[in-house]
Image 1 (cartoon, helix red, strand yellow):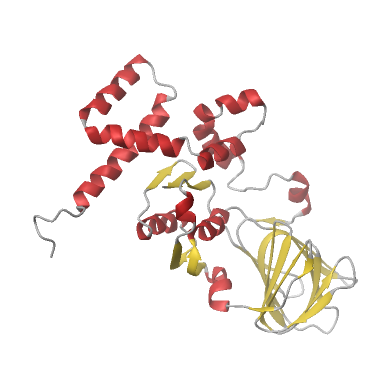
Image 2 (image 1 turned 180 degrees about the horizontal axis):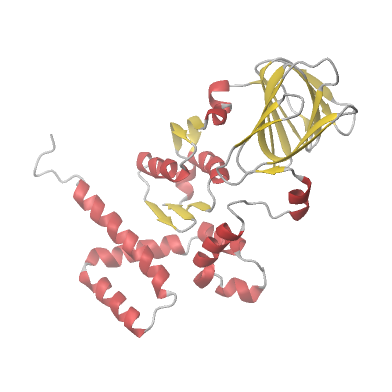
Length: 321
């Protein structure tokens, strides 16, 4: 039991501090377009409690941090110098508008949209069944098409991640293309992830032949094998931690003693907005967890608690500091 005279932190005090910081962030938004009356209300709030001034100073530090500024710039529709100078006053509504206009989908490549038969938005998963009986589960932010007929059976993952369950076939195997590689699949289950020019294959069961689209490189993979193929060619065959690496198939995100920065990078794929860590020290803090992927906001909030970071939620923006 806590001693009544203890000098340690008190839950009520912590709650008041977080409330003041939330109010300070709201004031930062309102002050961008505040008239004289609004400025007067702000000064009244600032003078009401010394904690308000302290909170506003902290909020300004987050607001003016480089990660938040970069998020604002990236959301701008033009990169003209004149716009960059005045992007901050307008970036919050711009963030919200961008999320709505993109339909919660982060592809800006129109040719990609035109090639794909199926697209998934941030946090969305989509189940498909192909004409040959193959089952495909598309993960968040993925683009996929297929062409199956007597002459060929081809599926293409243009971007994102997909889990394939391919039945045995008397005829042609299913050819799956993703970036620099083509896979020949029959009676197997495997995951293909293609992001930032790198393809990763993880075999759950069965066998899989992986070939480079350029050159003669190829490799046969078995159950439990993993392989990355990037601009420098084939990597080394490794073993899959199926409980962790394939957890997204069950709608989970599992990480063990992983730097927070890497966890946030993965979470950003599932959130239709921006997740910003305003402290570089936080990115190196090792965290462990098992979370549902259908609520990335709750995951970030929980990560803030276990790392003793402050958490602030704004329209289309989550801030850790």
